[in-house]
Amino acid sequence: MAVTEQRAIPVRIIFDYIGADHKVYGANCDLNESSRLEAFKAVFGDNPDSTKADIIIKVNEANSYFTIKLRGENGKEAFIKTDKVEVF
Image (cartoon, rainbow, N blue to C red; front, side, top):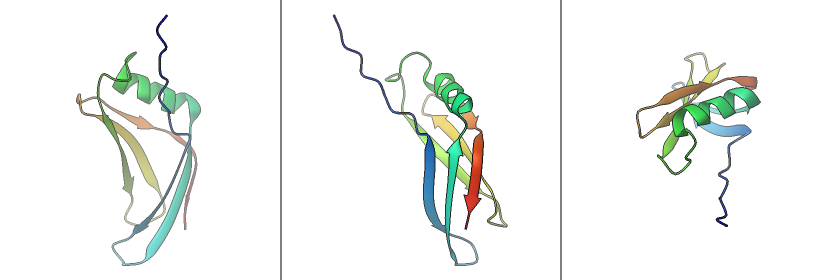
């Protein structure tokens, strides 16, 4: 019997960045459970080894909000909804 290895899917993202105003910001979000599972399924399908993917974070100019997108090397992309977003 073959053992399948499960890959981790993030639940929360926390990061720091330097804004265009040269100030340091911190940010975090909780990823919506159904949205994150759907996004990973859309990019990877049923085979987690089928491609590699990046998590793309885009912050708005006012440094008050950001979006999360999963982009696979296979050209597939999916936005991931967040339940809570905080930028400080």
